[in-house]
Structure formats: C-alpha cells, structure tokens
Length: 458
Image (cartoon, one colour):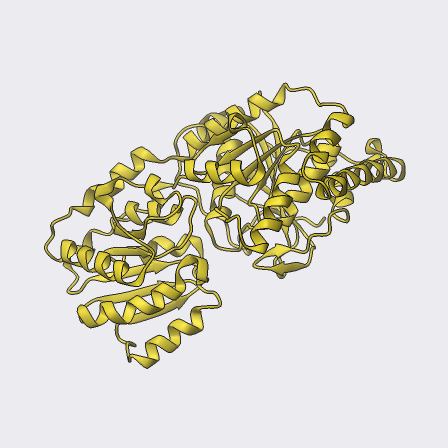
C-alpha cells in the first residue's frame, strides 16, 4: 500500500553529513517503491520555500531561526500552523522524524499525534546519562517518544542507548542500518602507484568527533613516518586548532586542510588516500566508514558505540579513544599498506553486497505497515503516558499536549481543513515506477541550486 510520508529534520542538504544523506537516499528509494515523500527542514541562506530534487522529491525549507549546530530554536507551538498546512496540503499519513537534536523533529511528532497521524522516529546518535545536557535531552526525548508509533535505530548499540534514555519497550524499536550507494564510491586503481601513503580524514571538527585527538596524533605520526601525508576535510570549531598545529610543527607539506566539502565530492577526496582515520569519541553507526571501505581504504577507527557493528575485521583496525592507541593503530595500518599485506581492492565489492538503500527502504516500509493499521488511542490514554514521565515533568508535558489540542481546535476554526488546497502529486508513468523500483542507484546526487527543476514559492 503506498503511503504519503513526511520526513522532518533540521539536518538536510545543502548541509553536509550522514543524517542528511540518509534522509535523501531513503526518501528517494521510498519514492521508487511507489510512495509519496516530502521533506520538511529549515531554510538555509537563500534556499527557502519549496524545492524539487531528483525523482520529484519535494523539500519544504521553512523560515525558522537556527540556534545551534543547524538546529532550530525550540518554539513548541509556533511551528504548528505551518506544519498543519503542509501536512493537510500533502495529504500526509505518516510523519517520520529524524535525530534527537532536531527541534523540528520533536515538534512535528507532537503536532502530528495531535492531528491523529502515524509517527516514526529514527535515532542516529548516542548520548550520555550524567551531564546536565544529556539529562535534559533524555527527558525531552522521553516526552516525544511517549506517544510514538515506532522507533528505528541505526545500530544495536544505538537501540540499547535509545531504549534506556527514553524508557521504551524494546519490542517497539527496530534496527535498520545506514547504507551507501556503492556506485558513487568506486576505488581509484591508479592509487597503487603513489609514492607515499596518504591518510584521509572527513569529519565535522567537533570534540565529540575526536578533533582534539586528531590534533594530538598527527604530529606524532608525521614524526614516525615522514613520508605520510594527511588530507583533512571538514569544518568546525576545532579547525583553528588544526591550523595552529600545522604551523607549530611546520607540517604544511604533510597536512592539507580542505575545509568543508559537499557530499558529492567525498569520493573524490577519499580516493586520494590509502587509509581512512576516524578518531571519534561517540558514534551510533558511522556511514563514512562504509564509504571509505567502498573506496578501497583501510579504516582505522576508535572502538566506540556502534562502530564495531559496521565493517568486518579485515577492513578495520580498531583503537581505543586515546592518543597512544591511535598512534599505534595508525602505524600498524601504515605498515600493512606499505608491505601490501592487505588487499583493499576487494573491499568495494564486499561493501556493495552488505549495504544497499533498496534493502533499507524495504525494511522501513515494513515499519510503516506495522503502524498503519493501528487505531488512534483516546486522548485520555495519551495523557496518562505523558503524565508518567515524571513528578513535575509529567504535569508539564500534559499541559503541553492539552494546549496543543486546543490550538488545533482554534486552527480548525480559523483555517478549516476543507479550505486548504490539496497539491497535485509528482506525475509518474507506470513504466517510470517499474524502472525506479530496481537497483538502479546511478542517479543519487542532489542537484545543485542552479540545476533544480520546478522551483516554486510557498
């Protein structure tokens, strides 16, 4: 049965990142399976209104203030009028939110449940339990997931983390990993003729991504292996630390800082290297590791979170998240590449067989089937679950839900649903659907702003 689905998240193109790529690829594949999918995210610079991407994927860039790391200011109720209009216009049946740190995601799930729609949440990250930020975030996550239809996690470690954080029944949480379009990450055969070994790092340069570790280990590795070169792509608050490190140790010839790169350019950066270094401190899955292995790189990464679940042992050298261990593991990888003791030429075909977006879309489709036939519970039963979130938090959450219901009644009176125009779906011939339903992953890159077709105002 085809569904009308809305993917909601603060993190989407033109921002680079794994969540952004996940939402785009999953949406494209769901469209190829016959579903109608739209994406709702915040405006980014001049990119606002409605845009159309590949396969007729429609993106609503809503004008909301970005507070921190591309996450919008949590307004709770002000998003409801605009969201309701979009959901009614698009005849949405299922609202699928992504990312624990996305304000739009949490608000969309709350308002969608008030409207009686089915909801799904995908968690892409791991969070702690002790620091003040994690305690507050976990309480808000528990509020959002108290009335969720189903939860998807990208790894078993992520599932365990989310179940504990939100006090969920494990039976309502499924594990569906990320994937890659292997044809977009083909290795470069000419790399074998290189006279020196190149280590590639592609990451947001934040403390939780191991940027501080990276700043500490690069000088030591360069001292131990003078012929090694580093290519670092990414931006963030720790970028200045890397620049200062390069100047201090005079490593301008060995360390190249590229800044932020678009996702469609990631492969071109990766194929310049032999080793991929990923010094993260926390990670739920790590799609970039799969992309690196698909490009024929030996992966050196910290053994944290869900990373051990991603790749087989012959593709990966694990390290503890410490300076000495990372230097030792990277030196071992350099020795293996230098002596040709590991054959990375077969990695691409192996990754291609392990990960594919068609499989991810099929499994997500089954989740939609599970929740589609469920009857909506009475408001009293919903309020009971919210009330159980805590002595004080429970009362606050109940008040929020009651206000949300009253706001819906007011919006129905002010802007009746019958007076809201329904949009026409993207035209697709039956032969197009049959073609897209196959494993043709050649068209996967998001079109640039100048190349997007069917631009419209909203």
